[in-house]
Image 1 (cartoon, rainbow, N blue to C red):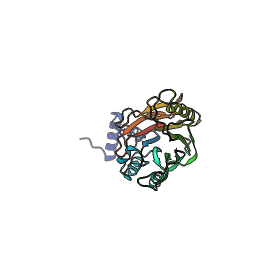
Image 2 (cartoon, rainbow, N blue to C red):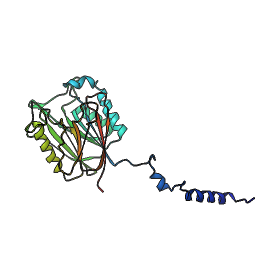
Image 3 (cartoon, one colour):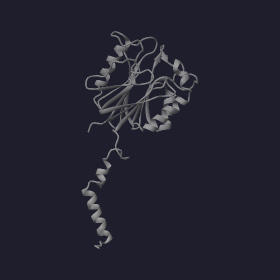
Length: 265
């Protein structure tokens, strides 16, 4: 019988496994599908219309403050870089930011000539839209569209993060997307805003239309497969290889969108 020292035997076994392709180097093991350290695309965003004013017909479903708990839970579960919120309240956005540690900017919507105070309960600030980001916000800008329908002025808001990414959101009018409507005019203006950013850009929001507002060179993703109000929440951007995940929402009348994409090198 031939006997090998233990160290010699281990060396022979490792050599045989490597030759058979059964033993991988640490780098190769890291690259295998399903490895817990597989890297997701480096930029992600959560979009939600949370129907939080206290006036809209969907408010009964928010079961305040459960709607805020749901937003916080989705931010933490998805570990996103950015969050865009429509139909939000400034005090509630501040609370979400406090609970998650995110930075934020809020754009107040003018309603019937002035800010609209959220109600049921009161004391939650003013109605509008928000962008929250994990990275620090270096600059922000928000402006009204040139036209709007009814008494609610519609706006867009964009922030520039310390990572050099612009994140934008908006909530367009609900008068239809036919040519000549306020919605179609706002859509065209939104496209110009996004085209002018000059940095890697990602937009998400409730645009109340099915046709895209994305300018040339931007991709479009929509919630057409959503279980609630499908097709009217959109995401546009210049980040690479975007993917979309839909998550049913319990305490609002729109599903949540999670967009993941790559950053330019």
